[in-house]
Amino acid sequence: MTSNLKYSKNYTELGETYQLVLPLSLEGLVPDDDSVRLLSHKLEDLDYSLLYQAYSAKGRNPAVDPKTMFKILAYAYSQNIYSSRKIESACRRDINFMWLLAGSKAPDHTTIARFRTGFLASACEDLFYQMVRRLAEYGELSQETVFIDGTKLEACANKYTFVWKKSVGKWEEKMLSRIDLAVEMLNLEYMKSFTVQKETRTEDLKRIVSFLDTYIKDHHTEFVHGRGRRKTVEQRFYEMFRRFLDRQLLYDLHNSRFEGRNSYSKTDVDATFMHMKDDHMRNAQLKPGYNVQIGVDSEYIVSTDIFSDRNDVWTLVPFLKTIESKTGIHYPTVTADSGYESEEAYVYLEEQGQDPYIKPQTYEKWKKRSFKQDISKRENMEYDQETDSYICHNGKKLIPLFVKTQHSKNGFESKVTVYESESCDGCLYKEKCTRAKGNKRLYVSKPFIEKRQHSYENILSEKGILYRMNRSIQVEGAFGVLKNDYEFQRFLLRGKTKVKLEILLLCMGYNLNKLHAKIQNERTNTHFFEVKTA
Image 1 (tube, rainbow, N blue to C red):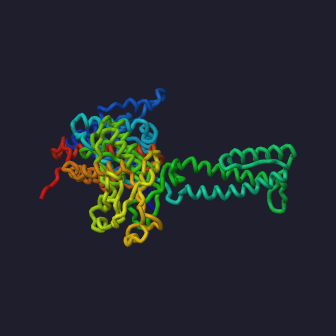
Image 2 (image 1 turned 180 degrees about the vertical axis):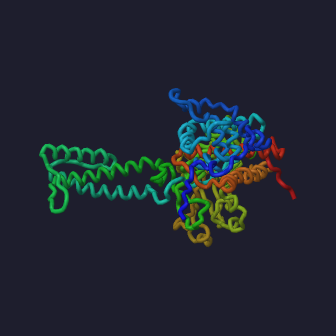
Image 3 (image 1 turned 120 degrees about the vertical axis):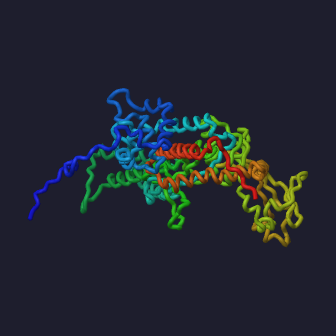
């Protein structure tokens, strides 16, 4: 028997009429101590002038007020909701999101995505640091020291779209040798004197292609294609140098995108291929990602930035400049792990009047018995300050030979003194001391050793022990919450600007959740965890 039942798109027609049981106002459904109330209150008083300036004065008004849209995004990121479609679903079904909308129509996912990547991009950083300055005014920040750490997060890019700088350079050199042969043949054919130099190869190739193009037009040369059709000499030369030029323009594009990096991804040109800590395949596979740096004070993230450097050591100085310029706080001390130690960092901190609490890179090695018994190490040699010389295990002096200048990636200049032994001939300890065929040499940066020693003494002090313990709890704990509790393992947007927008929203949500937790646990205005004594 065939049923004639027809379904309607309006499902209320399928059943009985239900009586309205929800209150007309959602105020009573949101608990008094819910974090959404605190979020709405704290974000209400921020200055949104930059955000409103992103909108055009002409045309219709936005469906949802920009301030409300920002609250929705900040709350979504604090609740582990990052997709625009999931945020749209939450606005339609979640009471807290409905309460934030205050009667406005729920925005669709395209509106949310357009607001996040378009209008909010120019104002999010300003709003985040406004909130940080408010925390300082409330007395929530110690302003005594800033804990700095970084992690690598995977970019929204295909892991097989890599472009390597060395590979580009290798193929570029191979093509240049083929170009030289082709230019020689061209000059013999047309009695010309074209040359293609390494520094100006693009312009030289354009000049040759332009000459061939003019020659073909003047002689009305017809191009032929397909099997059994014989190409003219002019057509073969033109197609050859056209391919050379197109390939060279592609290499130029690749080189312009590296910007000091060794690789980038075709699907996100700002992403660099890095080793990730969460390597589930355990094969040291490189993935496109970003180096995320955060600064934490009193458990709050006071600053964040995105870098393409795989090594943390080159990020410290620019990140410290960002912290001071954006927050307006000059921290008297800076606490970081051994990955940030460099002479450049020590010099910058000294110039800024900031005391370093940075763990030396050799800190853990110094504790080992094998290091203390290693006669090749400078630390295990006696130093004579009057003669500026080291005395090796065999009693021979290592005297200064010359001073050489080294330049870092950022252009920082350091002086390294080279010491050489008087004579290693016939020494019984030479195999344990050096692999050099001649005399043993030491490369010593005296300013770096002096500043490292000062930082080493700092971290061993009572305050240094307190800072080191809190650094491991606060800044590493913040990354643990963001990556595990918030399940933020991979960026959704592409490009450095949009990636920074995502991490700013994430840190905004983290700070508001942290303030909510401190209020509920009556821990406001607390800055450090105390060191437990046995």
